[in-house]
Length: 137
Image 1 (cartoon, rainbow, N blue to C red):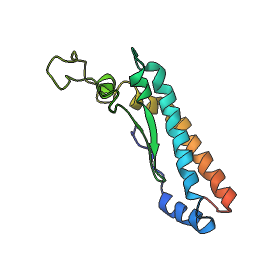
Image 2: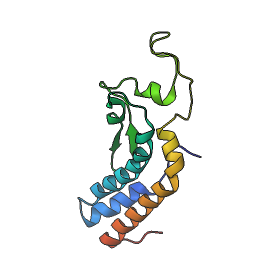
Image 3: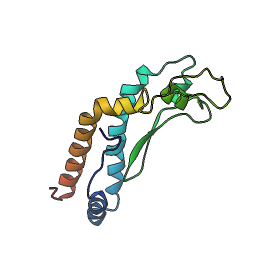
Image 4: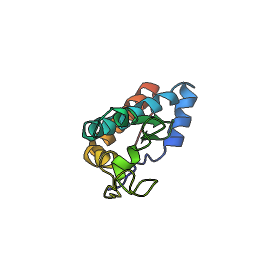
């Protein structure tokens, strides 16, 4: 299983959308956000919580060509430790957590929702193309 879903020809697709209407490529970003939100929605209830900051730190970020989920930040710098484990910056603090390369939450979420994520992206991009009068192979 890959930790990325690639869309072949996205740059050409965006150029074609831009020729129809300069604002249409921005719609690609919305579709990508919908797809990554599905992964986040799977992961959130599985993230342990005390204050809720770890869960609140999980956000969807996208451009017109890629989407990703980001974790941590200033309010929850320990979130990567929760997801992947490890020793921490200072030995013994926080307590060592078994390291899992594929993570406990986000990568697992992608693995469990990959078919649905692919379908959301495919359906959304096809609908966008059809609305713009473009043919997709």
